[in-house]
Image (cartoon, rainbow, N blue to C red):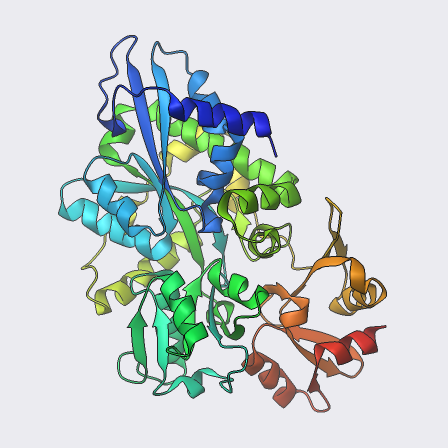
Length: 447
């Protein structure tokens, strides 16, 4: 996708830089380097990172300022939000993107060190919390949260995935500090631990659960959307940088809006582009960022997301990772309001697209949507060798999942998919005559 844009962006990065971070003095004719920290493999930040970079949108917006300055962009890729926060508070990164829990730590560290930051826009979000999932090994006998008692569970403390684990265990009546043995590990380490058997379960954020499931290295135990609490990713900027270079920050947010529009209009091409840049399978990227993916993208800072952020503070305080966080002072949407203009109110009120079943045929740049999961299964049954990926929404939470990895239930001739076995069993228990069937059986019934 856009090879010329990628080449142009790469060429800009190779030019000599005369300043670093937002500390550049912007005198007439000077060069201002804008340093952007992003996480290429945290694919719900792509509209402020990987996809944005590949499109070259930010550089184009900066070139259109015509304010007498020369602008360069220094893109810095990180595995997590923590080093981005460290670099921001050191004055070395101007704009960063990360998940909701890391954003709170970003706010707390910035205030603590006298280097305040602000949440200026949102990237990918799920209003029910479906971006986080707890998974187990493919052959695990664990089927519910209750089965985790006394078990080793890997997560990244301070992440939204840890927040999901803590809240899910609490709702299940399990003490998250004493009821399990929590392993504080980076996602890749946790994935290896799960495969090696040194961890019984893994609670992680996008795109790890989908990736491991797609690779046949894990199966879902708990769908984060069962919490019905929003989770999201966003853009944070240093306060001093924003005040000094407001036009630059607005240019970034306009570019983010362009990347968002591209993703919405060309979801398959966007998934392929992100896959190429990150090494992730495009089928996994599409699960989250596709037309009916788990994540929704628009830059508006929605009130329900701010409310969720306030609720997240208590989880971080309990983990002794932060004290109180003044969320209201951290959130600053005036820059994105100016960047989006009259469309901001529309995006603020926008709702996620309705869940739908979707097939990605082989050798096709387009996907096909279906009214019901059964219709999708019937199509898959007729085109078994021509399917690249098939996705279905959980019957209760709407979370999209791979059709061949879902737990299927038949109820009076209706076929219903679920992400996790516990939700499927809950449905069966509440509907007489319903029962769990294999994927193969579901395909046969649909055809």
